[in-house]
Amino acid sequence: MKRMAIIFGVLAVGMLVLGVVENLINFRWAAGDQNTFFGNPHWVLNDGKIVLILSGFLLLVSAAMWYLASRKGQSDQRQP
Image (cartoon, rainbow, N blue to C red):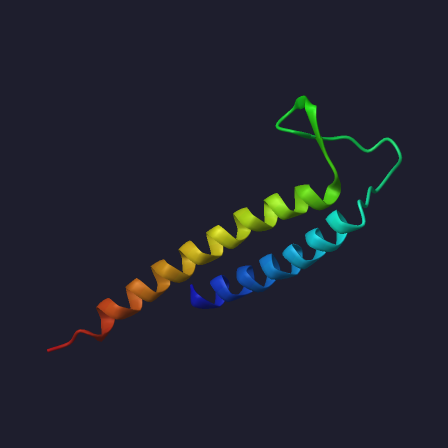
């Protein structure tokens, strides 16, 4: 599980860098690209902000997996 957490963490950091770059340059994939926040037409986000939100969720999942994997490893080391 630690390997999976590392892979997810590296992917999240890569997406975080991509999201920051896209957000700074206000990048849009197409001219009519509409990224609404949960379908709300009043909150239209660019692609960089969407990637930042998704990478934040992925980073949280990676941290949770790392925590669970480290807890599991500690219980195996307690041998009499």
